[in-house]
Length: 178
Image (cartoon, rainbow, N blue to C red):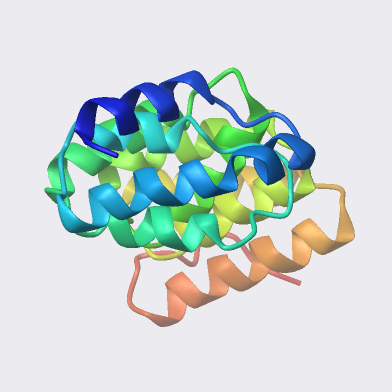
């Protein structure tokens, strides 16, 4: 598979909608991934980010992360931030998970969007990514989220992230955590 074939294949399968679809195309997905592992190229970033779907990923998400680590970080951040606003909830979820590797203040607004629009899994992925970003926007967001959250599991994670940031020197601490 060459670059053009790989890009066409990946573009055609955005997002991969079901696990049975993935089972049918996994060999081609691996061929496209192998090409970009050997030939890192910025053109692959948006097409990989938009392939994510809801299914057991059969190991492909780790492959995507490894490919993206070989591409210029600024390019990955640009496209990752765009993907956090995808109309597809699965893309937003998996890109929030990827943001844990590529954390940057550039992703704060997109991660907050994922948190506000997502289900509990997406909210947890966004919070985990935000936990590594020390920024006033994150502090303000955490303070507001703590006052609005009603889900017990989400509150536990919010309190953990808030406390973690406070302990690591972030200027947090105005809001008491019970």
